[in-house]
Length: 330
Image 1 (cartoon, rainbow, N blue to C red):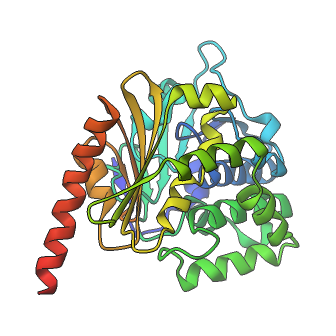
Image 2 (image 1 turned 180 degrees about the horizontal axis):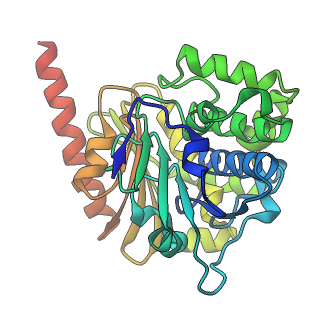
């Protein structure tokens, strides 16, 4: 196993001698996962036509259809397919890879490109930089800038914009802005990409966001906001998991709140929990404590139990950090 935290790998070296390459990303792919995977996929198709290159992701949210080649994404494994190289993008552990994990395990060589601090370097070659704004930013650093096409630039720009909260989160560095500028010089319409893939919501998405906000509650002396969307609500609104994207970030904007917690019931007594922090609480530590992962200000975990049990267990860990932080300030 080779780990290259702050050392940039040379993509051409990894590709040397390979005839087939598969790309995959985490379950319920978000903007950065889709952007980084599609961006690298299109670059390989353009610059290495001699390679058999395929991309595997769960259903891509409709909003990301603005990016080219979304129709080429495969959502199931064709028979006993094996690849010389599997590139895993924006995925902190093998369990998060989902249905494409057998392709990862059967590949002759594996490469992981990621920026999650919780990533334990599970591939043969690992390019993991927790300080990077996004996996899309890391993909950019591996490419020959002069050969990046407009459509590749659109995909990477979308990924960076999504994981930085449109360049607002603390992970946005001067280097991030410089990379965004380079991508814009390829002739992309950055404003349109952000508007169509980040801000624009369907009527169903607005309805379920409204429900989540209306039924939210403040706890821990109003330092934490919590909301729960149950399966019956998803069925009532005819909503998909991708329709929930952005809800926890909206909750985080509540004045006076340090941590936002959003629970989505996927099965009876099983919840996908999204956590967002304004900075005083490291939510990646909390997610890891319960078997999840992520970043200091954005993390997630899947937990079993009633919603009250899940909220109480996570709240206890949030309170420990808040009390510790308050004690250090005295």
